[in-house]
Image (tube, rainbow, N blue to C red; front, top):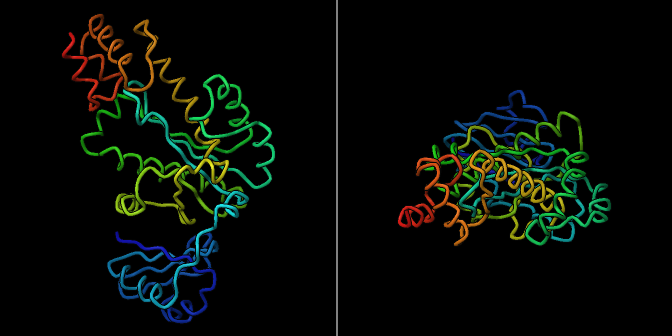
Length: 296
């Protein structure tokens, strides 16, 4: 189902236009209407969602008259209460793909700063292992872990970007519902950008349900808000835990990444337990698979 989103805090003009077509609004919405095959929902957050066969037409009816409200600037964004999401494992041959969404209020920011929370790529694994338990205890979060076996099963139908879009959407949606159920403040959702906004919108339309708060994308999102940084740390430590557990049955330490060391361990694994073992511990579409097989 096609959908378009408009950010418009003042929507009295739209409400007046659709007044004759109003229907019972969903939770957290001010009003809703059904007009010529399109459902229009105005949420309390300022987001107006157009869904249905004529969604594009209705969206542009109002988008042309008034530009969307500007997204928060980087300086203001850092002080909002929001959910941030990040993924780990996408570039590693061994191990799962992990996506985590974490909720951080503006009141949490001084505490996170004291913990020296930052992007997981800038911290050592040991540092993150010390920080992560505190984050997981205090911050609401949602983790989605796709094991190598499951990854290999769905990868032919989901390219890497489509898979990450689906996972981020699901993690954000599940956590958004929890936060709203607890009546906690929530201004927006922020994703550490891994693809263009056009690609994201293309793939997210295929999902059955999406969050209704504004979804923002930022390159180096962990520098824009500590919710993304917290999510990246939790995701990294979960990835490392899963990676370690995957190697236990084979008495091997599986390295992260996709370099020469990975190929060496892959060859050793196959020689001991057979090539079919790779399906359980690695992402088979990586070029490493062919390199490993060529060395056997």
